[in-house]
Length: 272
Image (cartoon, rainbow, N blue to C red; front, side, top):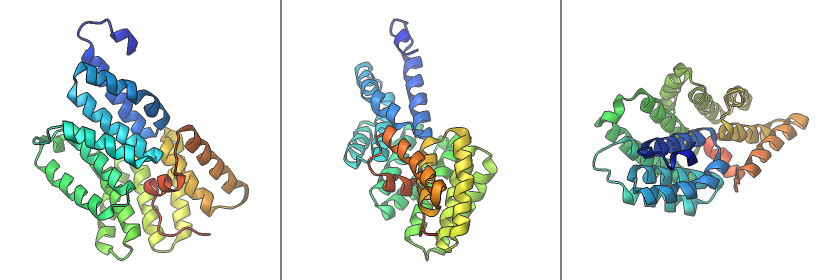
């Protein structure tokens, strides 16, 4: 479609909207190979057209791509380029994309207190903006909260207040009936189960999430779940989970499977 739009007058808005929607779907499903291959030319085209929103959001998606592939230096570079170019004095969807990227990047860098502070800042900003009226954004934010807070929980096992916050968001995500969000809720439940030392329940949750992500093509979460299951199962099943995860990591250029998996599927303890 995109090459055919080159000679169509006034079709730039279709081009950049298509690129942004496709990039967003790749981030959701974990198609990092596609993004890594295509983003350089998409960024160059956005600069040539002078479309600031497209350029900034693509830099955010490039940051997400690099952080999942394990290159945190390049991830930080793309994020900073997008942040520097964008005027965030008025809170918009593009600002949310940047803020969300910064939170995930901080988590990947191990800056958990900073990530939690950024979550609080984002929640405050959204409440004061029209972005909050979008129900899709609401679920997006719940996904972000449960991911960040679950990771924080496994690093602060005595923070019962934070655990209560996670459980509250889990209930909302469970009620959404959207497989991605339900799966995120199940992962967070597994993290809390691991905190309680219930590794049998943790495995059970991971198996539930594995089926959800497999059915709906959420490839990154599926690989992370399988990597974790490969560590806590035995025999042929364990080898199968590990091989399936390894295939995804190789295809998408994931340089640090352990960090990748623990970022998407946090756990306090792993064992049989």
